[in-house]
Image (tube, rainbow, N blue to C red; front, side):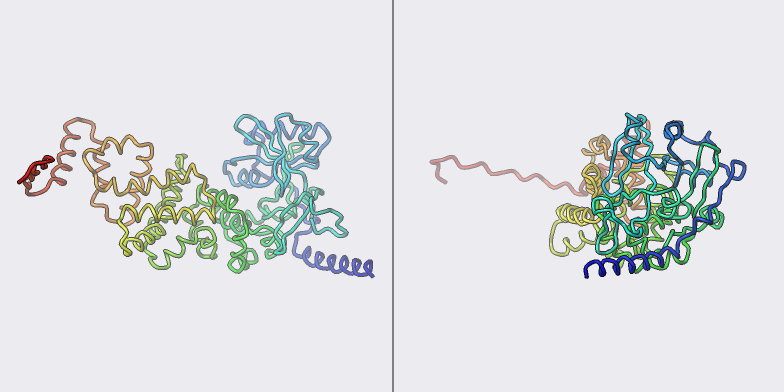
Length: 465
């Protein structure tokens, strides 16, 4: 009886998998672009990546550059990293490179380290829904909602191509003849400027909900459109992001907003109802005061300009702007309850950061300067003469000053403090500094000097009146 039931389950499972595979591209649609049909050149590929490819090939293994690096090179962009896919297992890869290490539980990968550059090498993966699957839970395992918890099922390059998330990331480049292998129509989608999931979108999003964020990121960064079937389920499945570990969502938030296209990313996240899953407190505060989103838009716009100019950006400043509407909303609530402004700010900052860390686990090295940026705002506005040089010497001054300018740019009133600090920093002569300091003294001095009251002398013990 048990064997019959098991056989029925296998047949049912195979039928379901067969239906799912109907939505995937066929291996017969393989398109190979020869060297003269694309713009990818070995001159634009990392020397270290070429070393890894050559060594794998010399030991008889297949090895291809794959994913975003090929996509970016074909779009005349500069890849940040180079990933390699091969038929060698992680243990065999590890034995070929002394400067490598095995990482990952959910996906077992190899990092080959060359100083500051890391080349990521992955073994070809197969479908974990293969018929008569004999792999145990240590190899492939799903949650009840369909999310992949562990996945180390290996296969062929064709299997690996269909397992990747988007068609534009499923392109393989080989150094043997400098050709590009396209199994899923990625080249055509790049020409059409489309972001398209491989396979059934609902199933693929349930396997890994972060794919919804990746779809938004690629669309914003590349200025592409989401294919209709790729976009359709996102709003209904946005709640699945709540099951993703907060540390992973922090990393994804940095990729979303600090890789270019941040402003477009923000609007797309709100359109597809994904913003609430990343920044719930900010989302709630913007419902009550929509005009407060201007500081977020301006911050993201400035971030895009800095990235375009190859200037550094810091997660502390980004989160300071992104959480500012939530902070102000909570501060106002505390002050209405009678809490002094300084204490209200400290309590609100603690609560807002704690709530946000439940969604995106912001490391302490960022939360400390984040709080300092907020707390310095009132000090920069007051401009106490005795505190000027002290504030200028603080490491976080520049970020706090930029944040003050951002607030004024967004319509907040700060008593002209932003312009004053700008003038003070730009003044190069002592007399200019003196004029600005005299302005502060005259602004802070009372209009009528009160006579200082003379204290009555204390009575000595044993004396009488």
